[in-house]
Length: 183
Image (cartoon, rainbow, N blue to C red; front, top):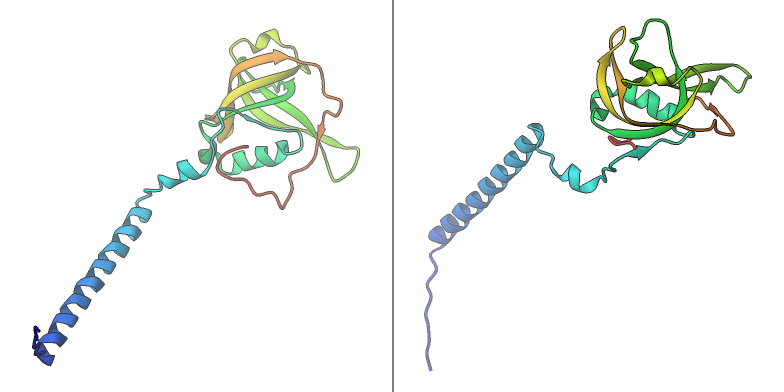
């Protein structure tokens, strides 16, 4: 039979536990500090994995004014997003020859009154489309200038279409919450 006699020195045991605890505490502190610094510096690569990014987002008439408002209010977030939508060609006197408004009529306060709303759009051959022509476009949101910084659609594809059965869109909803991409 083997007998092992272990004699513990309480002061040495206390020092060992204290040193191990101190090393664990410093390790946790450094890990937390690293995490805080990487978040402050914007290292958020996990976002790309968590949020789907459609190649081209199709805007519906039901959310058109919500998206239009959101893109104008947070333009830098949406630069580079490709969208497709149907509207009509609308021109104002002070835009360039290759520009138009991809427009819809928005109903105001449940009345019979409407106002024109839409994205400023650029297309080199827009002269081939007359005012009030309904078109379906695919374009990329870019940053432009029209009496200040404004998002505009750089048109990639455009095709003439028939007017929809209900060409009117509603006002933006106060409860609408958009993400950083348009679905």
